[in-house]
Length: 347
Image (tube, rainbow, N blue to C red; front, side, top):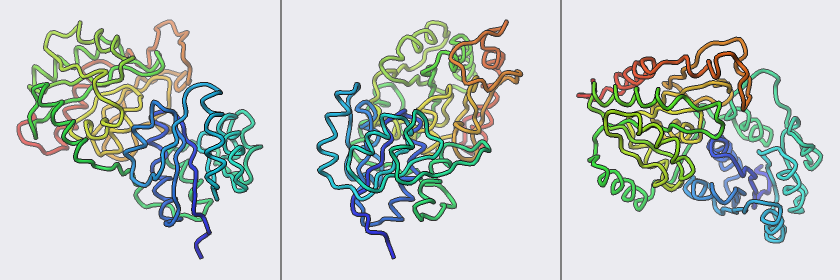
């Protein structure tokens, strides 16, 4: 018999990639509790992405700072949740789960900052490395959901979003059905960023050899990294950095032929919508946070200290795990993805 869960709160406020990783858990919980109204608590800057996720009934956005979080407590208490799931696993998210007044609160047993003390049930996590998508799904399984054969990433395909993307691309000179390469040249950590001169050389080769438009994407704060790349290019790139709201990224990346990217949120969105990815990985571990699914290419240079998960680098050759990956390797990987796409005229 289905548990009487009528109102479910999912706490996953950040970051962009982690939110995408939680989508299959959302889908599994919807299947487990088909009558439940699902609310997703998320940081305000990522709320537009959650708003286009299938299966979310209410988006509860929180502003930065303690005041922003506390300001949401009265409404969450009044909602009368039957189940609260905390996938963030930090003190603030655990305390938020407790503050709802719900008597059924679930999170990971190994969550950080003492957050497990706020849960009524704790989900054990195996010690072997596993992808974040599969780790989150352990929560759904603990609640009685069946493990999906194919984890589901489903965005709402709104006609107004499709039109906005097509208009944006048309203004940039890209017509419908035309192949193009998306590039995301930034990342939150400096140690995750492939050198701008490498991006520029790879973009030039793809443009000159294959005649493919190269489109730079990213948020407004990432404009400097994109400008550093375009300043070094000999061909003309299309720079849409800062012009694409986060809620349009699924539609935009669905249109791309391939994405070349650092370890970043857009990488996970591209994988979620089925766009092939060529990803550069340095200090982080693709086993845990690489592009999910088959058919993607992850490039890195083997050094004894990676993955170190550090935001600085003390090696004699700084960021050798990234800088030693040459532009030619990326171009070859993109060519492999183009061959797999079976689209005529790309090679």
